[in-house]
Image (cartoon, rainbow, N blue to C red; front, side):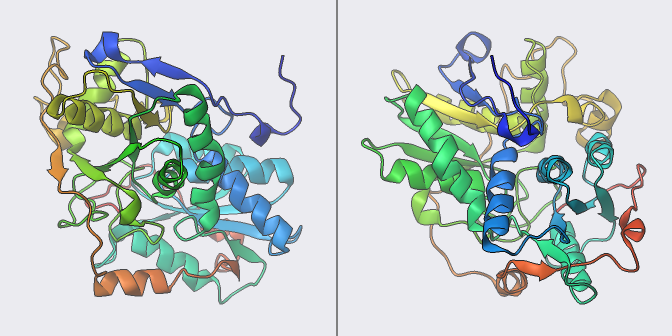
Length: 380
């Protein structure tokens, strides 16, 4: 029996789904959505808040602020509510309505950015908003999940060791790439492990994380419009990019077998299955990380009109065979260390420090700008 007194202290760490009977290949899916925040973001959110408290940056008078497209915002909302902090989440119209409502139910204030920047898209616009607030009130503390080492350290301390305990013979690990906190924490842990583990990053087409041109991305979670500051490609063996239509197909295929997962999980599963199909995977022990569950995607990934409007009427087959022959993702060459682009440097230069900062203009009430009708053409 588990008895807790704070919601962030509970997290199911050792639940895996064997996907062989569903997808025809041996792949174990680590389910990270069974906690009160509903996603893997609970771990880095807890790590970053506790580090800020220990350093004295976060005090009872502080107001937390963070840019998030969804899951990190929910995790911070839950912890802030439990600890008695106020929290302002700066998001954009890509964020699912249900996710915004969850944050508000937990007492957070939500500001929705509706116009992307020419370089850096919606992400840059969100960060510009957060940075602009810092001139108004020093009570605000920006944790900056994009640069905060607590993001990857949480997975180095918890996620990586948990996988190692359950799979001492692990051969290949598939990790979705967003801020790259999960990717970097797990990759760093297994780099010093007793056996070689092949680390495969799974990204979405349209993301520039591992190079390539930016493109339209409608699903929150994975992918970046600039190179993630936390990323060190020397820890990654290979990168796979997945079309969002394949993400949708993978999610629906799993749901028809009783597993309702989020969009990021669909991307990771699609990329992992194609990688396994393209390699001699017989006898390999392979694990993929599922960041969240699917309830918050009912109005998007699992809503037929939304899916057909964005990806076409043929993206899902009426006979339920959507993923029998998934369109292969784009296989990126082995990640290479490369010079950052000028816009990368400009972006990261704005968020290299974590400390007192942003405040909402006028009052927190001004930040509570949520419009369910917002649409997005190019995410960040």
